[in-house]
Amino acid sequence: MFELLIPLIPIIVVIFIIYIFFQFIPVGLWISAIAAGVKVGIFTLVGMRLRRVPPHKIVSALIKATKAGLDVSIDKLEAHFLAGGDVDRVVDSLIAAERAGLNLTFEKATAIDLAGRNVLEAVQMSVNPKVIKTPVVAAVAKNGIQVMATARVTVRANIERLIRIIFPRLS
Image 1: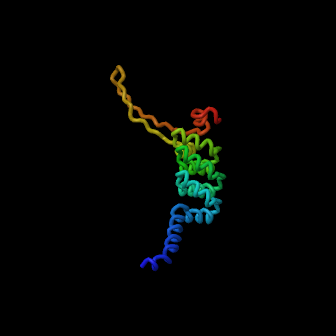
Image 2: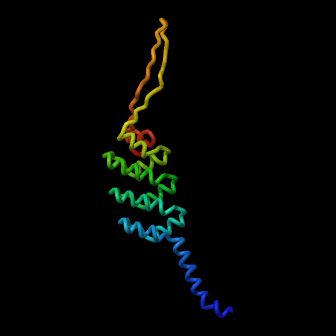
Image 3: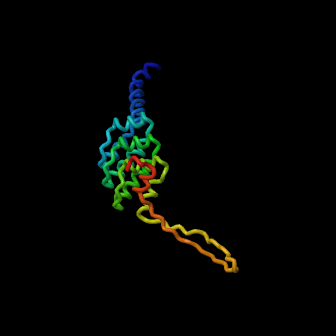
């Protein structure tokens, strides 16, 4: 009985090694990155797994940035993720800022994101101002005339000023 299992042991070991290889190394993600024209090394993806960084988040953001014509490195994206930032939001804000003609660098966008502000919303508000309508304010004068007023305020974000307020050293 054991003589029949001995030839199967190397086959089982090889299948187990291949299974572990494909579980640990995201080959499908690597192939999709190459197909998108993004240069990502297979060992870089393994390093991300070892550092407990989800390679899918980083590589998909890198593909999005590369397709939009931005020059962002995978190391910077990974460092921003490890610092606790939202990589997708930063890349989306950089794409929106470039399309709007705003001067927003990767370092400034990550600084705003790490400060707890929504950098994408700031870029969008810089391009499309937000109109805030106040509730009705009522008052009565001495002679008994009632005055009711509302106000509409247009708010436009100034990214450079926001950066100067949050991080005086960056500007």
